[in-house]
Image (tube, rainbow, N blue to C red; front, side, top):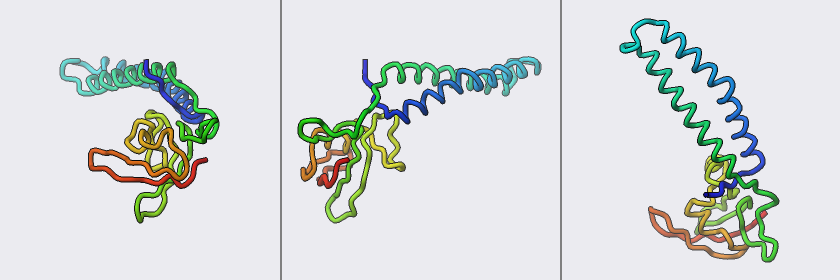
Length: 156
């Protein structure tokens, strides 16, 4: 079974989403289904079909979150390895590519990844490439669009 890395905040956020889906959202969809069923012919009732589709989505998301949270490993500390300050999941890392301005990212699990917020997945090309490396290392990043090097400027 795959381990899903989550920060404490990410775990809490997903737990809140799961609680909302199990309580409020399930009830809302059940009411929509009930109203649609009272609306007449179920065969031609678009509202009934839409409610059934939403119910399937909600139940699927509940199952997905249940599994994700059951297999979650909470990221502790600053993401630096104990022995040699090697980058691990949870690390805040500043990288520099060529002549571009340095960029700072936090390495998180795939479920929490959001590049716009500066959170990149440990499974992404950059995340995979820099794990285990330390400040000063130049690391080769292989992506579908090509290969490039980044220098690790700061960790922590």
